Amino acid sequence: MTQKVVDVAVIGGGQAGLAAGFYLRRSGTDFVILDAQDEPGGAWPHAWESLRLFSPARNSSLPGWAMPSCNQGYPPAAHVVDYLTTYEKRYDLPVHRQVRIDAVHRDGDLLRLDSATTSWRARHVISATGTWWRPYLPYYPGRHDFPGRQLHTGQYRTPEEFHGQRALIVGGGNSAAQILADLAPHATTIWATRRPPRFLPDDLDGRALFELASRRYHALRTGTADPGGIGGLGDIVAVPPVRQARDRGALHARPMFSHLTPTGVAWPDGHTENIDAIIWCTGFRPTLSHLTPLGLRDRTGRIPTGGGTRALTEPRLHLLGYGDWTGPGSATLVGSARTARDAVGEITAHLGR
Image (cartoon, rainbow, N blue to C red; front, top):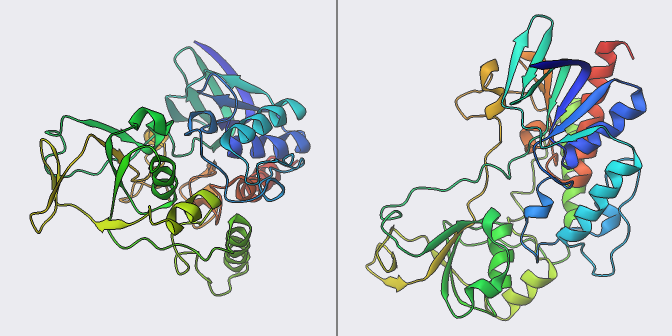
């Protein structure tokens, strides 16, 4: 098996991996970006067609180059894919595609990254594989007895395929609200949530959320009181399609059902509904299986970082873009830039660059 040695290996060529690549390129570090996908854009090419960012293009940029403006207001997923594709070329980032890293091992003073055909050995590793590839499906009694179609957020594409059907949307977050707004004109929809949905004020979008995340980021870095995240404000950003669906009464949520039946779902009070399809908008988990040989995960399934990007028990490993536990706002486009800068700063200081 071929082996290559680099200073830094980045696993994942999505937004977080590209942001890390920008700072590594600028520092003059010898690095490589290893991406399992066959096209640029990370998870964005796999999103549903109507998905839009929560912020205007100018507030959704990676470091160095602002996202071009979009005449559709909040940029759609296709606009993000074009931006990431051009960004990769603009900075001549060394992305190797269709390279799936199966395992990372300690190898003396280095870390070894194994794929099916090649191994890389690196002084430092940045894991930026995200969460999209590990959808979470909760168990409910009868789930395997329901014969209708069941799919997760990551498998939803267009509303037309559900035309005339009765569709159940499960989950109380942004994905559920956006998909429900997309589906409502085409299908009879039922929305089930664990608690009543909480919409953020209409005048708050990704810009305000990033400002909140920024205040939390600086508070954690300076040791001042943690102001908390956006949880106190709500769970769902009222982007225009969601706002319009809400205002016409299409976003009425019911309490969570108790079990599935061969024809649909049933609630604790005995009420039942016949349905044709279920869309589970129940979130994702970090894609970390390639790091299993390092033995770093705690009981929550996460790798402790102390609020930053560096793994506490393996200082040669940094994690980018998995959520607030790898830095406030790190799973967003603009937030990934900040955490990538910090991670690369630590790495290059260690390398003496």
